[in-house]
Amino acid sequence: MSTLEPLQIGVIGAGGMGTRHVENLSRFVRAAQVSAVYDLDGQRAAQAADIAGGAAVLNDPYALIRSPQVQAVLIASSDSTHLEFVLACLQEKKPVLCEKPLAVSAADAERILQAEMAAGQRLVSVGFMRRFDPQHVAVKQLADSGTLGRKIVYKGVHRNAAIPYSVSGKVVLTNSAGHDIDATRWLLGQEIQKVYVRGIRSHSSFSPETQDLLLVQMDLSGDCLATLEVYLAAEYGYEVNAEIVAERGVISTGQPDLALLRAQQTRGNSVPLEWLARFQEAYVAETADWVDSLLNQRRFSGASAWDGFATLCVTDACVQSLNSGQPVAVSLPPQPAFYA
Ligand code: ISE
Image (cartoon, rainbow, N blue to C red; front, side, top):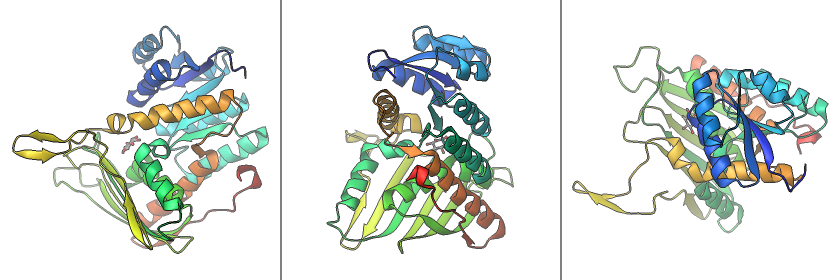
């Protein structure tokens, strides 16, 4: 791809996340231009296309993927649509940044691995944006510096303010906890081998089948342990914390806020309401890195299709553990050389 012209990007899905990507690409990533937008809701697509300064609004996602005006595709549609759209991009040999989860099961994600290997090129990237969050990056740098010795324990906290719908444990695991599973693998540099998951309904007003608060315990390949709290109805705001306990110290993400707020008899830091605000810097860095990697023919610094697949292998084991009440071993095949 030429480094002189901006990379022409087609965006599939113009909900909150897709629209934010369109805004970020248009405002902050000079080397990119959003050339086409698709959404099931044509009006939403048109609004996003406006933000991009008049991108084409297409009413067929596969036409967008095939379009000669689209050199790379960003998928931000609902989770269950990711598989087919990514496969269509691979068929066209077009690079694709797919929002997490890569698919809704490891078996589906494996189809993507097979198709990508058959295409003979690394074309698929996955939007685990915490890998670009300055705080998470700082934690990883310190943990990997070696000064604190071996990593022993990872503790993740992931709280959303409110559930948008009556949520099942499986959806929490696939749609939300995937971030924490990826962060555990990435920050520790180890694979998750065994999981034990318990879930409850946090508010008695929620429908009986809701499981919006999950506690996950994990054993990792390098003798590390991990625990995750994934809580979707925390009410007070949106918060993600990562902590690594090492032999000679403990490293945690600090407060993301720059200002100390004093108001209403309280002194402290404000908490955002949702992820688009909390991770804005990370989303910009992620898309900028993706575009730069394509224009300069280098590897994307974020998650690959293999990472998306490995996360779903853990997710599948978590769903099994939640349903059975038993610890479950993760079945992860050996990593093909293609993904080394
Ligand atoms: C959402 O899709 C995200 O990606 C957020 O980061 C996560 O916190 C939220 O639970 C998901 O629904």
